[in-house]
Image (tube, rainbow, N blue to C red; front, side, top):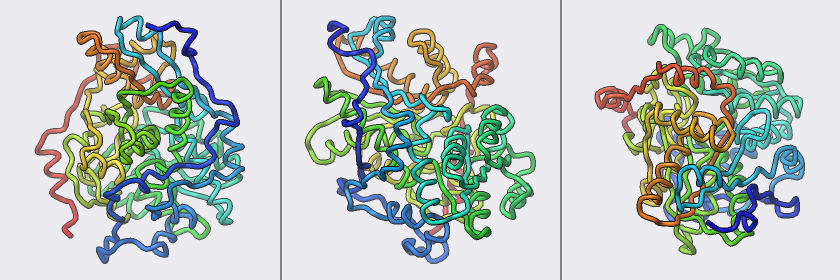
Length: 457
């Protein structure tokens, strides 16, 4: 192992080195992600149609497959300064504990009150809503990171914020809910009786613990039926991956400062926001033929959209009122088991990442919950950070790959995304520590039943 003085424990960027523009990965994709379709006509959604749901500038970003860089507005860059740059950390302690020749780095996105990377896009989406003169925004949240981030951004900009939180998370994570309320958000467990689609879902699935698809349906309904409101989403969409590219851009600048070239880049995958942001500039190099990397998406075995899903057009929500997206999906009616801890519970995957995966430019692995928490505790005891369950999926595979290097003697350089902290996930940690955590993996029949309901185009 090289002298530790050569590579700092934490690599920070100077303010002058910070990215001044987001990178649009789609501009370098030969096979562009398939367009969103109007579920009524089956035709690509127009800017006018999307404008009834999303902010005008965000619609432009969503549909733009060609502009490579979008300048980050100065107001957003000033907000970023509160918690960015985030550190790129050399995991010396983890390397030593594993006795691996691998070099391990992680990009830590938990240094803000929301506790995750979600704030990178939340402030951008809230900024464009405010600039458009809107009264407020609506959204859904799974484990709560996105809802927390959006409530922070809206409080900063003076916008109203209505959050529909997946019911099982609402009940398991009361403190995450209270942080949102502290920032002024109205938080409702989903599905609820506040919306027509919520009442319909409750009638069809009595006692359901909810899903992101359910919460999305409710948030969209409220947005389109209340003047002065628009819907915003924390993952999946092209615009979100654009904003999150700041993660990967910072990571690459930090690595380049020390002439470090990663062999593999690992990120957790739910809807795709963190993974898409982390890999963006590296995948861009790969697409342009300038470099090659092994890129690994890690998802929960209880919600395995990449590894067991179908690449097809599907609704983004359970209520089937949103546009159709071509993605790897388990079916919009798929509801993850209630024992699944944390986020990463969306039934589909970003259209950008789905296309890249379909083209063989990245790989995916599904890991079981107890194995994920085993890695989380190992990391916490070694590196001193209590990781979020979502992040711990990437930690699991990073450790596995480092142990392979120990067996083979290869000195690979591994970079993974540590998306946030796990202080609001202690009920799940308690379950693991008490030995009551179980690994529920959906059966082929369960997935097939949901996929059978895919829209027929």
